[in-house]
Image (cartoon, rainbow, N blue to C red; front, side, top):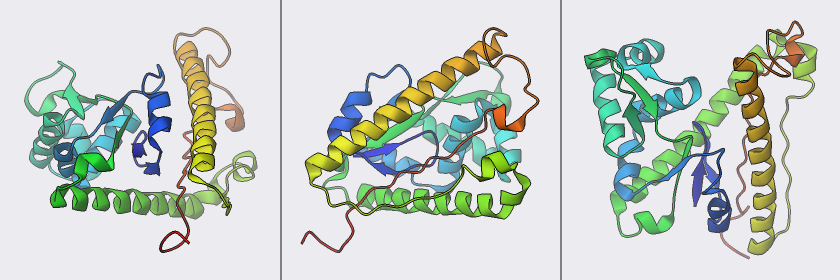
Length: 231
């Protein structure tokens, strides 16, 4: 099962990991149908959904300016995303100045949803490759701008890889633990941000030290068997 988080990430979650998070108050998720997968497998639509999930509600005009496309195409593709439940209108504005928002923070799908549908399988394959390319681009962007960040951030940012000998049961348990940690931290930071926005509690107000100001952090998890086939 694919668990695709706020914007880019493609992570191979086993079913029980997704089930454990399905009712989480922190993450809202939508399970994609074959039709939705085919709709989402489009460069601009994927970027539009990412932009809305990362930066919040926007108009077609604003999104077009941000993504370097035209407003007409942006409006059309927003409507296509809305047709499969990935975005929705907020009820504010009219025409191309209508405001749009994402319906969830993440999406997922199962292989069962695309079994017997060659077009959906091809679309799912494109999405997986697209997300990996997006991660590579984000990593390269970080490396290009690495020196502009304070030392406190540079010494914490990095990359790691581990080769483990695991059974499917062990891998499932590992991913459940990692998912639980990420969910807990997200819940804590979300609560802190809401408290700061309300002007109450720790974190309210602008902090002088850049190391103490929350920054958007990309955490990329991609576990997979290493090899052409099981040995």
